[in-house]
Image 1 (cartoon, rainbow, N blue to C red):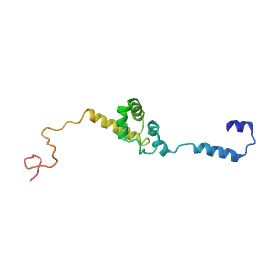
Image 2: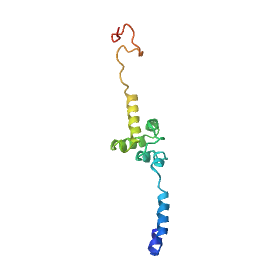
Image 3: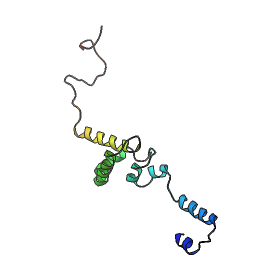
Length: 124
């Protein structure tokens, strides 16, 4: 199109407008990027993804570790308010760290949530 404009300076403004609209129509919306086929591109979208949640990134750590590392590196430098999809990467990092090093359970914990009469924390 630029070549046409250069060769024909008498192009009417409507043609230029039509050309600009045509090129603008090819631009993906933020929602399309967030839920598109490229999970790394989705990280830069300003809207929340419904496709690339924390469970996706946990699986990526195993099946595509380079992409997972790229996502973590990208999100380390981003403000979560501006890059909402990085929250999912941060959640995945937390899940994987916990899986590697689970929190210790206190001595005497039986798994019961109810207090019984012998429990020193129970009240009369």
